[in-house]
Length: 233
Ligand code: MN
Image 1 (cartoon, rainbow, N blue to C red):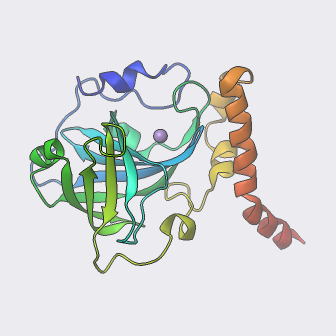
Image 2 (image 1 turned 135 degrees about the vertical axis):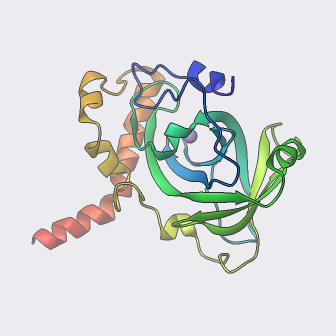
Image 3 (image 1 turned 30 degrees about the horizontal axis):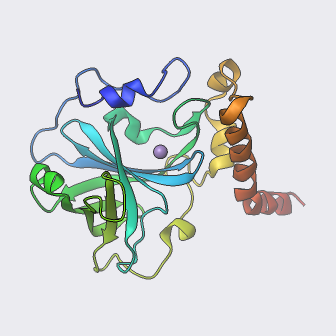
């Protein structure tokens, strides 16, 4: 089953992440396909690109995030399929696999430019994105282990009207789900019940990591806080 790996890695009594439908449904041919990018502040900050296909989300972890500069090749590690319901998830994973903060960074529809199953097997998937932040034509190319792990791919923006020398992650760093929320606001905001029942791990490696995440989230929000403080004065 496509989602076995996903479920094996997680304890849904401790994580707010969705378990997903037991039997994922494919959409009718021609129906718009969902895509998202989740900015994930875990032990390392990365961006998770997810493309709906055959009722699940094909997923790649992109350490530096997508770049709209066609000269950049961004490493994208292919990871386990995620349930469709994951695509709009935003919140805090208090402990365990992926512990940290997830922000819905971009969302929209995608269109394959090639036969997806064949392209996926070959490791050369061309597609178009229509999100708030990411648009136009892209390619995911498998490196076939050359200079990397067997699951390593490169995410590259094709040169078009939607490419350019702009650091999109820097230019548009905030949530598209909770308007303009940063990590600290997501941390403080959305799921107080879960926080109360399952406080983030305080001990061990996860506790250490989480402490650093919270500290980092607070430094990342500093300009916003300064703005709010300035407004109050
Ligand atoms: Mn992730």
